[in-house]
Length: 310
Image (tube, rainbow, N blue to C red; front, top):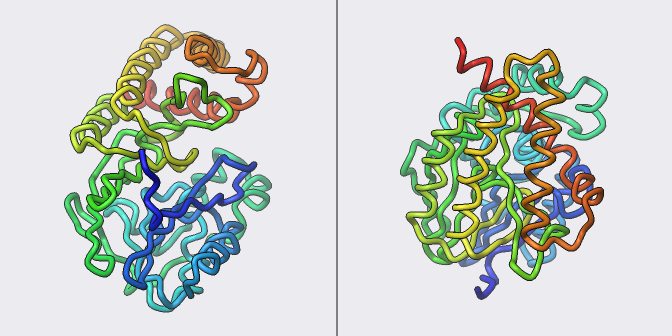
């Protein structure tokens, strides 16, 4: 699985090292970012440009996979530094990039105002004239290198993935799950779906994963975290776990302690799978690595259960 030298991984320094990534693609003197992290990530984005000998004026595109703040919270601030760039976003996400008030309010409800300020920094609007709405099948032209935007709901209804035919790579945001390098083993990468609130929907998510698998990518670039291979195996693992998570949701639903039940059952699921994968960390360490994601996945499952009942 050779590394394409035109694709650069940027650690957005969200929460901890090797947790949140954005990507820089360079082609014939022009550049595109895919995702950008938070407002606090902007220095890392600009430093990545400098490392490869590019200036902000050479960036033509900022493509956001979806508008969750760890992926796109810094878009407004970053766009101020990119004089020639346009922002590419899913149709459902575009209004939130132009006016992030509802986005901020929703995130504040989940995380609290103090955490928003600490972890996300300034969340600024993007001028409407600089926003490009990417319907399913939209092609971003990066100096003749076409980047295909694919509608991939399931994690969120405003999610798109990016297919780069040149490198046979997919940039998948949260659709293809999360995979932290601490959990790698001799069997390769360990992957977990992400069902974080509030729009998780298991059947569309499985369909979206299927669309990505049909492209037969050589590499997938995850926001959480980095580049992975052995894509058919990881895709099968994701679909199997989504089904297991749905069953956990059904079993815990209706209980007075539903959230505790969801957290406990998800923890057991992921720890058992990590150990079967040959992960070198002990159980407590696996839980520490996945603690935030277990909590968010439990919240997202609860949102789906409540919505599914209506």
